[in-house]
Image 1 (cartoon, helix red, strand yellow):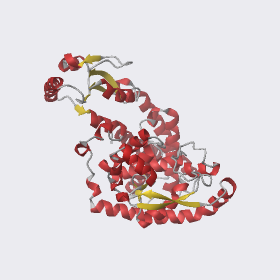
Image 2: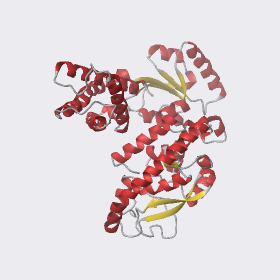
Image 3: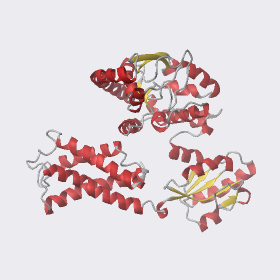
Image 4: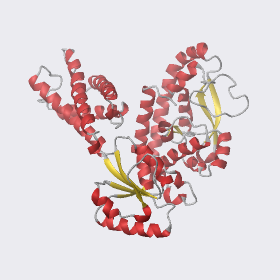
Length: 451
């Protein structure tokens, strides 16, 4: 977790507690009494709810924290959800007040102070003096895309770059052949030096190493290009997909951690049962919508490649016209003309994927993992992307890291990008990352951004 996200969480909670305390003393607000022996339990429950719904409604997304409209939207949605869940939580929350206006006051206390503080935060923290000053060292064709990526991201400030040639549109170029890192760092404030030695001659690398060792001894923060790339993009670099892949792509320890796997399977079973029950409740309404806007069969099955390349049948609610592929497999597109109007609604809300809870219950899929692809596509992708089969080492998922970070992929290049997200998940797999994927999935559905 970044220091900015931690700061946001800490100040939010402290501000809420302070606001509740002050309003209970100076205003006519008595829903939460600080004289009660249960006050710590009440505040703990409030903290849990606020952090949870804040995560769901992107209150701690740094890009949202820079946009005042999005700040207001996220805070209002978070405060409203917390208010509803808090007042209806039995036993461990305060009793409902006789004066129902107290609930309105409670909602305002949860929203107004946080909105004001977030406005101050966006004005102060997102000023250039709080950006991380970075210096790049590497071949121009290797570092150019990353420099373009951080341009204007409100988190990094490019102090300069040491390379073989100047990159169009970026100032402060230093020639690698006449490098004097000490001189550059003494004249500029640099928080992090990002280094890539790929492509340089042995002579250049030896000179660069001497400079880097000297700066490392002085306490300068030096990071490899690959590590920086992963931190910024949340996917593995393309350079990992070569004959030395095993040096950089290792399976997370959780892939063989029995306690983690048992917990994940237990969660799969519980959520799949709840999902199937929920599906039974909505099927009648989906059936009516299907009759008018998506005429034809309600369900359909399709072969997909699962764990260890084992083929299984996946269940879905039909979102395309009948016989959409006419005998041949075709990649789906976000604005695919084969998708019906009602099918678009099913996709945006992810309802079309809900029958896959049966696949999860059967153990063919998990709640979280790389999305399963069709055998026809896998066969061609394995020819074009030799490392593609690595994603089949774990169970495919109903949702996944690539799914929540990247839209539809219908070219080889886009599929390779999605693969790098999947490999990042396999490499960094953990309970925290799983939770993050679940929250991002909920956010995608709530904000109608189905992919």
